[in-house]
Image 1 (cartoon, helix red, strand yellow):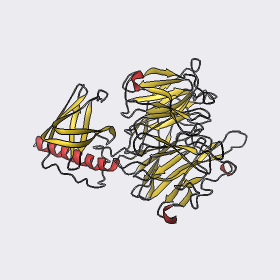
Image 2 (cartoon, one colour):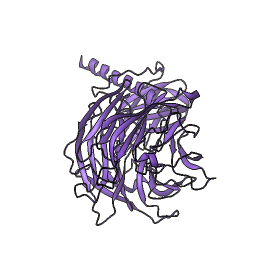
Image 3 (cartoon, rainbow, N blue to C red):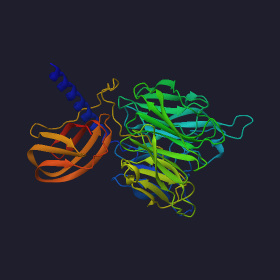
Length: 507
């Protein structure tokens, strides 16, 4: 009876994974990165297009600059829908989005052309809809007796792309979700454990806690406040960045509020529960400013094992499996100018599983971590690797990890979002993992191109490629040395077959 139970459990996991795979393969919401500004009337704004995998450097003729806050959204097939700098919104034709003027109006934004503070807006597809999108954005106030703007509420606006002949229209503006003093650069989002809904999170000022807002097809469902054990306050005029790990289980936050003794030059890591939305303090690391400059960016590797952090002049890799946390120095700034120093600033995880870093100030170059799953300097960090057509202006768009699926076996993976049809009646496969290589044997020979993807139990893509088969009945995927111990799945697809197989890594 136990073997039957185990078989049924494996069958259920594999079936749910196949559903997740069919869903995440189309998640191209972050295909277009709209950035920068126009430094001359004849010059286009810079952008990146990941439609074909590697980023193409393209231009567009927008009507507002992207300094600081920057977010855009494509549909699931990777076609641009709209973009915003937190004050103005442009549709896919680079014209003003209908009814979106004053969508984030307050005394601060009324006289500004852009939000020159990072991470004040993020755009998500509305759960359960293929045509509606949600912008979560922050308002600000100038408290009496101060000279610094504080974010005082979290707002939501909705765009319906079926209106205005497909150009879109804002149908909800400035809906107040949280009315409280909040924290800069902590706005972010991650998929709920059911793989459909979203958690939108933001720090509460002068505390160690975060708000988590659950967004469902019915709108705002739940708002909770959680967090414990952090050794610094989230309030005040900080620099830094926040991000979720691709598997959705970790949240990292950097702070360089050197003017306040409570908020040190620090990286803080939380565990995050995708079912409940709760934060739980995990670890932290202090950066000594007497030896280096303020800490700014942070980004996780695709396998969620490493986190990269940077100051103006140095890049570090931290192995989250080490205890205590082990910080490795990757590279110093090489002194490159264009025309100003291209020192390190913020990072963003790309659709191609690379990490892109913008510079402080105006530049046409991005630094790139090409193999972020690799340890130490094997991560292949190349400075000023990618040149765009015009200055970026310290800007990178803010995206969540759209390709995250349901948290299988978590207790909240309760949704069935579709059925993936495939034929495995004639094709059978056996696999085993050894020394970083996954070996597969088939019961028949295969011809033509095979696409294959490797996933963890969360449905996160860890490796994706293709291979040409010539009457082959065996196939090996190499270079998987960085997979940590656990359960994984491989999916192979050609014109006739679509097959999933579980394999276990024990190293």
